[in-house]
Structure formats: C-alpha cells, structure tokens
Image (cartoon, rainbow, N blue to C red):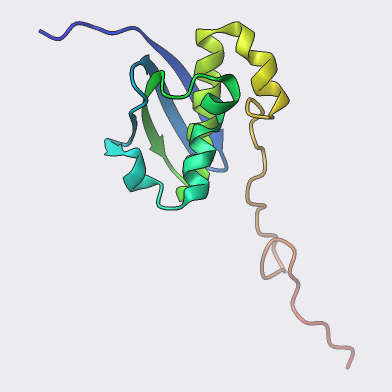
Length: 132
C-alpha cells in the first residue's frame, strides 16, 4: 500500500482555464495532465513562466508539481498553472506572500474575452459605414 505524502494545494485561473495544482516535496518533477512538463511546454517562454514562482522564492528543484488543467488554450493553461503554483507556495509558507506579490504572481489575470454585441461583427467591430 502506498503511503500518503503531504502536499499543498492551490487553484489557479486565467481566461477560461482552471488549474488544480498540488506541490509535494521532491526533486522538481512537474507533471501537467499526466504528461511531463517538457511535453506540454513546447516554447521556452512557457517553461520560464511555470518555473517563475519557484525561482523568485528560491525553491527551484525542491518540489514536485502535479497539475490538472481544464479549459482554454495552451497559453491560458500555463498561466493558470503558474497562478496555482504561487497560491500553493503561499499555503506552504505564508512568508513567501510578499515576494510573490512583488512579482505579481498572486494576482488573478482578469482579462477575458469580451462578449459580442448585436448589430456588430465582433465585440467592438462595426459593419462599414456608408453615407449614401
């Protein structure tokens, strides 16, 4: 029987993505939706985004991350995982809050797609105006 390991939990959100993130003490293995971190994060920018909370707090390579993400696209999901990791680190150690807040990692990015309005082609784009 497998013994239960203590973990810290954080929920991260960005656009329409929601990430449920668990951090466990370990050697820095990151798993997103059952896939290794390198497979999900094709771009180097995504890798730095996910690792940012650890590098800022000086905890890089000390925790394993298990994340389940739903909704949105790849960029949105990466942002949600980063937010979830930051929140989980705060649950683990309240003293990290000021550092993470300074780098704006605890703020939920509230920018979402604006709804389409009637009479318009998109949220703000109007049909071409003709005078005569």
